[in-house]
Image (cartoon, rainbow over all chains, first blue to last red; front, top):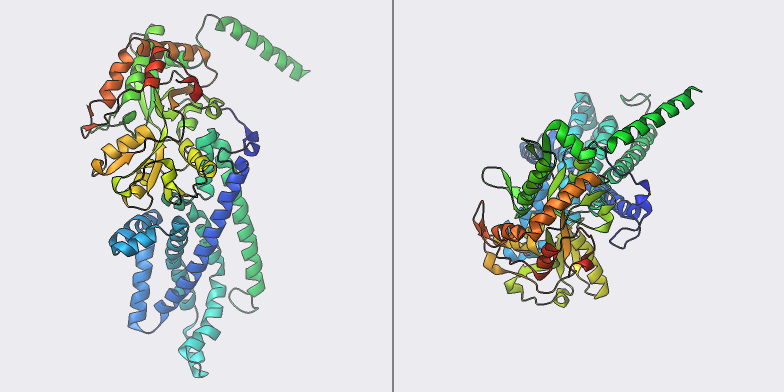
Length: 243
Length: 303
């Protein structure tokens, strides 16, 4: 290898005049986190609704849930973001399309919503599996107690199902964070995007991507630890997931 | 004691090697002689510098120059046969592939600047380009000041987006600058009215316009964001023997007038695969540079 290592590069000023190269990467990290958190909130809400719909007795609801999951699950995320960002505004009426294109921070919103919907399909499948794993008697007992369907889900089924799927949800959250890297394809300068900018300006490619790797690992370590605490905090003795 | 003996041996070995090195080849030249092959890095879409034609074969202005360098290396090493290997590179892979020895020369449109000189070397400049912007005729823009408050796109990680950001601050334009992943995407943003202007090296803009659906709809600004910056063919750092051969080859090419001929072939005539004509006559600055070849990264040296 004929490579000129320069670990001091992080403390040199970046050519954009926004501080050092490290500041550049950290601003990318902040954007990565903002996108991931917003996408995760969308994924949890949409995923929970669709996941519940897939377990309802109603034919229409489960058909809708099926379509949602298959639509968002079967297309590569890269293709989806490209569709939302470039194709959608073209098929809308001209005025609406133009409004969408000139929205401030369009790449950010597109990425957060796009990744959120993509992940929602996965959350929905997990939740459906969680609900189906409960004994059938649970639902019947809820009905026998006089609870409506909504109340049955709210007080009996969902609290148990969510506890069961908490460990796989942790991986889904980690996936959401990692998936934000795809957003550079629509011009969002998140952590991977900033690492690429850094290597374009300074040509110090290995340092840039080493730093990005470490930052991703650190963030994911924090998430894993936090989710472990959450799992322990919500655990109920006697349940499948309890001790 | 054992350690000292090792150091002693190492020192002795270094001494022997450097003694022998006075006559023998080193670095890239030695490698080329030993393997009988030289590897050129090419780009797949840097029109007209280095790109794939309809046979998926890399062609272009920089490729032609690289083949001339290969001839010179062959002559220098007195080889009967020198195999030319071609290896595709992108802006993200060119440095790792150069550092680990996969490619010996990068034949593309890489800007030679002082910051990058810390990592690689460049041979004599083969092109000079200034940062300008492309816009739709219908938007009625004229000068840089007309970009006030507008949405402007440029490619992430380029010197152009840096110059645009600086101009935005210095001229108090208040423009909304969005970064795009690559040139094609940035141009798409102008094409679809997501941005009014795309700031980039003027020659890349010319090729994007020539290749667009309706080239007559677009105009490239007269105003420039920068002095003309040099493009160079990249080679490994700290390999003076190889650089000497490459520099001599490119200098001979440019001063002999052959450089101008190759230039006209790629910038003034129809080029494959679609028969586009970039119609970009050689600039005064580049004419001067061809007469007096230079590998300086400083734009002020090209007048």
